[in-house]
Image 1: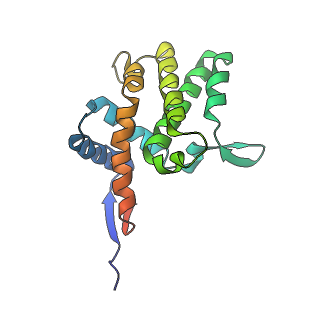
Image 2: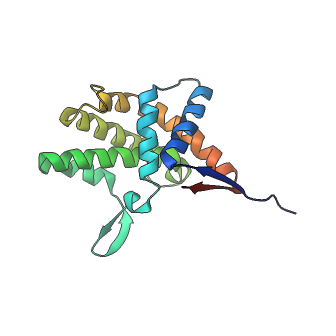
Length: 170
């Protein structure tokens, strides 16, 4: 007889992701700063809602074209630029970290998405460098992009390795 599903109850997904990232960070060779874990838990929590990961154009749901968004952001008003750069960077982080297997299966390799994410964080830093009173935070995210992706990948692998595990939020 098969294993019974394990139900894990959490108050909120952000806390679950933060704890998972913190544990993974302790187990890797090159740990990242606590602030990046906190920020990354926000990103993972946000992208649990598929509406954040995809975009709707003319009534059709499709993948975001991150490279195009990054290139055209500078032609937009200041507040929209910040939103676009953050969206592109965070989507790249989520994609490279949590769905690294599917990115590797694409025609464009994961390094392309990593470069887009790094570039978007750098551009965001030039517009709004502070996050939670930490100056040049988005420069830090750009510098540590690959390392943060590694931590998220560890969490993703752990989450995906047990199909019997289910989260119950509330």
